[in-house]
Image: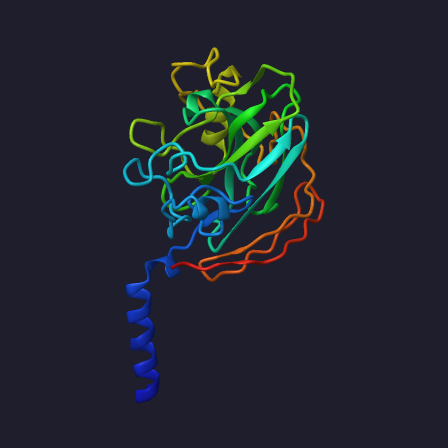
Length: 280
């Protein structure tokens, strides 16, 4: 028989969990550099912009729309063209990993975002820190560096955080690469669980060129639609358009009271320093 104190404790826990769904459904978010609307984004807070206390939630086309879930904010980091930015992700639910893309654009039009690195199938399981190379020809000016994640298992969702940066020391005028993949939102393809169907969609993405004003040959182009899935797909990680697949040390953080330690990317250890990102 369960004692009365135990029953009381279980009832109290049930009430807390019911009142705090974020404790149960904590997902993943960028912890460094600070993304838009994060309470640990000092520039965002100083500008008096509204903080998002559900930063780990997926995009939904409504109050968390494409792109980024939030409008542009102040730049949080300056990076020279040809340099790199290490993006660290933290949280409490990796959903078996999945597929991530890191992209650069100069507006919030995702059709004008060039993918800098893609990690298929093993994202967030093989690493939590990813060095993202900024092309040497990237035009100087304010830009958007984004992380997009499609979870491998569970509800078909899309997660996206955006980091407002400034590109400096560049004489370049344009960059080229694969267009960002968008899925799992109304009006877009739905990615199945696993790798096979997802790989076909990523492979089908067109190559675009964009300038510093965000315009280019991707302007107005339809986002990629899925091709017929191959009959056999290897489960090996794929890194198309990758300028770097070796992790470097970067700070990490705890999302929703859950610690996330940085792992390795392509067999290189990345250490992290945990900072508190607890929910409001």
